[in-house]
Amino acid sequence: MWKLTRPGNQHDKLVRDTLLDLEDHQLVRIELVREDQRQVWVLTKRGHGEAKQLLEPKGIRVSALREEKYDPVTGKLLGASYNDHAAAVTSTAAELHRAGIGNRLGFQTEIGHRLGDGYVQRADLVVRAPAAGVSVMLLEIDRRSEDAHDLVTKLRRYWEWGRLLPKDVPKLTVDLVRSRPGAIEDVDHEKRLWRRFYPPTGREGLVPLAFVFADTTEAKIANTVKVLEEADRRYWAPRPYDTYHRGITARDYRQAVPVVITTLEQLQEHGADAAVWRRLGRTREQTLTDALDNPDGDALYHRQYARAEAEDARRRAAEREVRRPVCKRCGRKFTDQRWEETTAHRTAWKAGDVSVCGTCHADDVAREEAAAEAARPQAAAPPEPESDPEPDRGRGWFRRRP
Image (cartoon, rainbow, N blue to C red):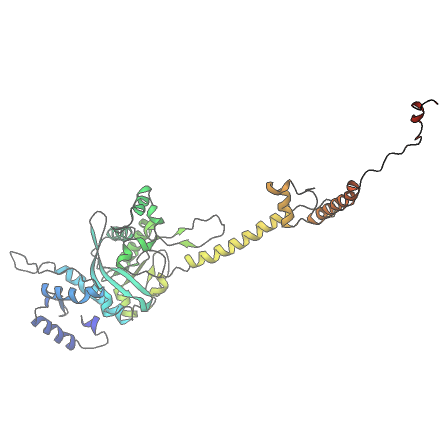
């Protein structure tokens, strides 16, 4: 508590006095005194209830109640090993807070994430630090107590939780997801369950996950990272973009869980804002925001896609120019309009000589109209009377005799 609430103070008197006052009101209790004589404090049932009333209306979820359980024979408090883990969780939150990553009300512990089969995966720590470029991140703290494959299982569960739909989703969406494997990937993140609990991450993919190792060896960390990278690729690794364009090197992170790794010792020595975070799939350590960013992701894809589209358009235009007809009479290329007139079914029947360009076709039409105009007066003139070279010849046949 001292580290988290007063990270700049060298002495914990103010925090200790505050906790003692809360203890007098039966809101907190001492659960454990560690080897270094530091005390581990937890909420009582009454304090837990008041904390929920105070924080949950503000959208801050309160962790599960830490109940007192004692051995029925020895009377010893059970679950002491959990308290060392809880201290590591609090120390991690303190280091994040000291580096300006999250405020005191931006941390939550033991937050449950219920899967479709009813199993609840609890995150050791949830941090919200939008001012630091980390709108939300889940953290798992490992103190040499978990096998690497246990972390693989945790990662899988978080990935599965990120693919769930809320109960009130429209039936059409439910039917779509049930129609085929992987159909959930066609459902926007805004319509998924995780967006009911957490804000958008500001990056592609699901909610980021951090594994923080404490009190362990470099060899164990290296082995764990190797297992995570080899066994979990479908959960954290990006995919190639599904596009017909060649030369697209960008990667699709939309269905992946961004996973970063560090140690509590590095956080304490260098600070959580230093280059102490390693992203799965990368070889060097970076700052937290750099590790979470995807320089080869969506932004690069849109740039490469735009360039590929422009290049494809230039190629198609060049190929079309090669096919463009040439006038058999004057040698000029057809315009787009004339080309369409001579090839489209609806206009080809009246396009005239389809081997000539628009200008020559216009000349043909003009000549035809001129010839028709010249022939029009002759067709309209009345016919001339027939000539009679011997007008009186026939009369002699019918003349009367005197």
